[in-house]
Length: 73
Image (cartoon, rainbow, N blue to C red; front, side, top):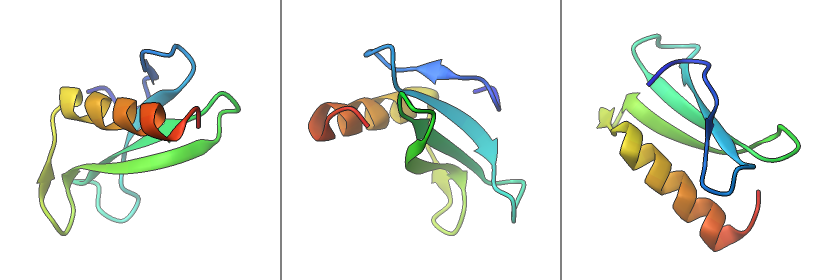
């Protein structure tokens, strides 16, 4: 997981980027972008109130599920 790097999903259009939370730098989030470079979904990856601990593969699977079930974001 590299912050700021674009990770493209299987469709080759949608991608996500990891980032640190602006209020808590120990918390990592992932933002899903569509073909217009607009954020279409978000995910808490590490930390936060629920103490999330998702792997890179978990993030890919979550966003792949989202775009396959809800169309191209």
